[in-house]
Image 1 (tube, rainbow, N blue to C red):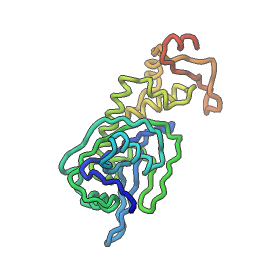
Image 2: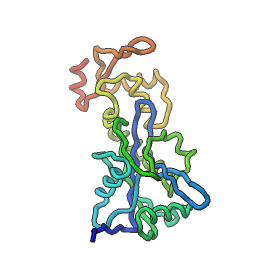
Image 3: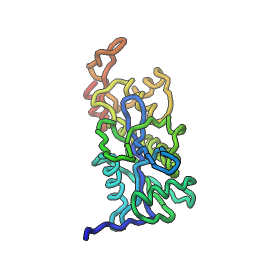
Image 4: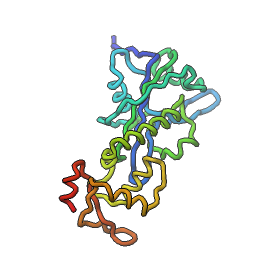
Length: 242
């Protein structure tokens, strides 16, 4: 007899994976196709599911993300739990989860994880009723999302904004090793959901001691070539490049 791992029907994990594509901030979502007697119902949800009784939350988050998207070794960070008794006003959510896990669902408390990555990894998902894809965060308000996933995404974005204010060097992991100020401004505005004035932005960031201008320029630009920069965690290293 094949052993099946029992689920914990009261605890789930949800992964808010933000990705930067060089221009905009995106979030990774699963599109659900639910077959009903009245026809097909479509909506979107975060990569997530209930956990097994014998696994840790961290292991569950990594497992679920890989199973639903094919992405591996993503640096997920736990940031908040969501436990409102009425997390979903749509009965389809619980019915769909019961059908896909073959488990009777009770009240679910979800533990949310967040990550911010470059969009340079292939999403692999083979399923008849689910598709994983990137969506611009600015489009979230117009989407139909499962459970309270719109709220979870909003809180995840707030967490990312606060996180990068405390550790701004982490933003530069999403850029090429050598980048233009325009590339950096696009990233900065995407993460903070703002639109910076070009001159004011350049004036501000050029005061950063960790940012080093190079004697190199990005060619193939529509106007004049743009100077390239590098970011160093050690300000003394940045001075050596100037």
